[in-house]
Length: 315
Image (cartoon, rainbow, N blue to C red; front, side):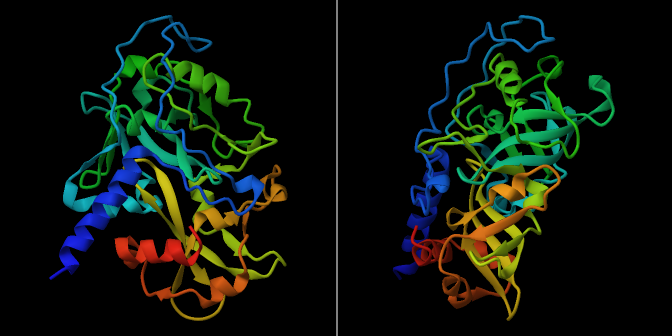
């Protein structure tokens, strides 16, 4: 009789964590330290414009505490990072702006920070361009994630996308000299908070950013460069874009292992131009091998299991 109230309470707590955009406070090492200030957006600067943009003052979308999820009974479909690849991006009127071909993830702050949109032909961007859109345009600007229609709706109109900064497919993300223009441009029309490519650590800046498509399938090693397994999926809070777990297929044995993202790191050499992306486990590798196994990715959506796995990894 007590099971159902407990599950409801836990689900509410999980959603509240997402809406507040709270960071994981456990810091296995200095490079993986986090902050708790992401929920406060910066003041939008209507005078801030992109290099090639007209100085137009746009009305800001209503400020939200979290992305709106539709339909509510399909939330679990929105907890898998791979789900978002290929979603259509819509404007405020429901018209197609493009397709979300990839995302930029800050792996030490454990958030999606940018959408990389393949623009619709009618927007006039050069062929092959990827429009860079802050993910906060969804999470704190009343955006909508629609699992049924596989869309992301932004509270902007096509004119606000014109002349937006772009990247080329596969472009190196570090150095992050492309980011200032992105933030300056988007401050004109949406609220921009503190989430960006740098990690909030003493002695920074530190950058641990990569493409979402590179994280899916990346190999995980221990501190002695022994292969532990390969990432099959990442589990996130859709309301905030915060990633919580990698789902790893072990190099030996059956099942899958839920690894808290806060106990992993991208080695610096893996971020070098042309280098192969890898992950390093910062915890004792025996914790990985002794971790409870799940038989499918969908099992990782269980709130109670997520809570127990946070405790298992010390978070």
